[in-house]
Length: 376
Image (cartoon, rainbow, N blue to C red; front, side, top):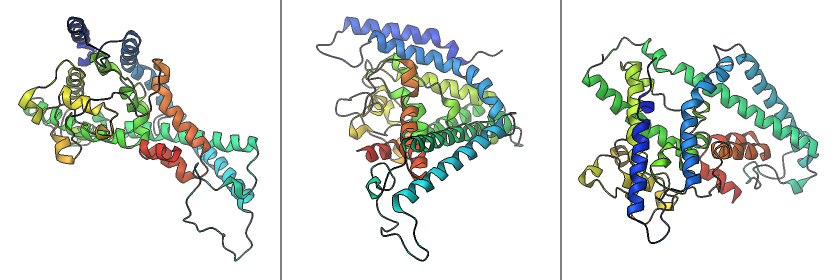
């Protein structure tokens, strides 16, 4: 059994963190320094890193039975999605009938269809009596069930259909295993990673997984280990496309590992600059800006090995003002379970409270900022 390169790199990660910690002790800050290690935060990051390595061995057996086309319970899950959606829709119809009253034939609503929705995305409760609490809970609960089961169905189907091994069997192309093939794998992965990383900041569904990595208000090498454990529930531009172009699946996995290993060392405040190389390569300076919650740094510098993608596609921002790490609304916890699930729970709450399918889907797929604006 082949051991992943990221696992083989763990001793190097530990040694590098020890070196960074030793440097900090020799060079104490005059005041608070976000790069310093704090025990509970570091343990949370390490536990999330370990969890990300274990998660595939847990989620694989759990999700395989409900994967469309493969699992014995896939149809049952799709039936649950449709049934819950039907219950929710019935609840929506009842609410609208109670709120606006049933219109006589040939009449039009008094308010235009384009009127702005209320703060929760639906009709104004003051226009009529609200739903009974029990019916509200049933409608909200069924909406959450429908959306959650749809997420599992879509994510598992997407993952199965776009796997590198599956796509490689469908192409006559084979770049072999020489230096050019490795270069194509590494460069191709880096290009796709840019878009997936960017989309992870622009769609709340993807952000719910990626937010884990941004949840720390500190920034040191341990932060690099704060990785998501729910990647099986997300979708992305498939890295299997590289295999469709002739890159062997084994090389795709090697490119993934090298990409992750490269990203480890850029999570530090010790290295201020790498000089002229910063014009092409991602660096601690570029990535510090990416982790900033300052408005100028939001959704910037998505590259992994190369920063040129950000410069080409308009998302580059050099490090300037001091970086404030963390989220625009920090979660104030080092509990790994809450770190991993807090955004999923927030999505579920928003879906539960929503009154239209348009809002429910938007809370899942539109940007995190859209949800924040609705709350504001």
